[in-house]
Image 1 (cartoon, rainbow, N blue to C red):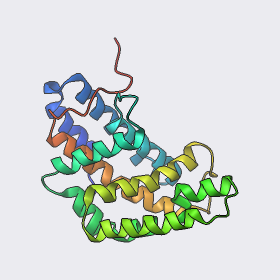
Image 2: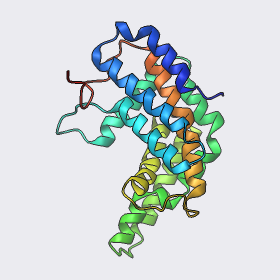
Image 3: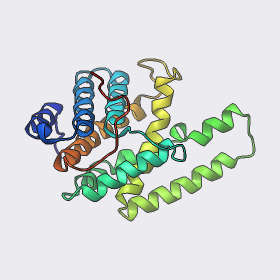
Image 4: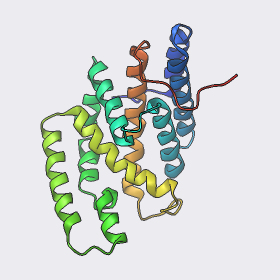
Length: 217
């Protein structure tokens, strides 16, 4: 499956943006702009991944209630995208193109948050290992069952840990320690993000909520 470029998405957006609401137009414009910026960093995996994550935030971030957390907000977004994705492009990318990298992410304790919590808290109860085994089992069952929205949630849970490591200074730039998982992350996001934006462009009237930090004139 060829990767959709930011330039292609921008051209598509130009054709529909005048008919969109301010929220929808701003959301897509921001996401595509950061996706384009990530493409310019093909030689720097750290920078590419960070810009990809900004693009992801621009695509789904919205105002939310106090009773809703970040994970719930993101899962609502991906569930809506899977339902809107008539061509099943996200499903094909996950289950045909990235089966190997996804399994690698699932099997990697270093992108499993409870591992780091146990390490910080000096917890020797091995509870995180039981959680990890249960998580791997449910994740692989979702992969084998072709549950697109579930697998998307699991993948982004793992990638979120990697995101935290980079954004919060928990990793060294261009480090040799996390190269393989970062390489896989960049490849996965580099394919999934344009597909997500493409689905949003296919449904320009769908309400993804009010953007955070609206444009104020």
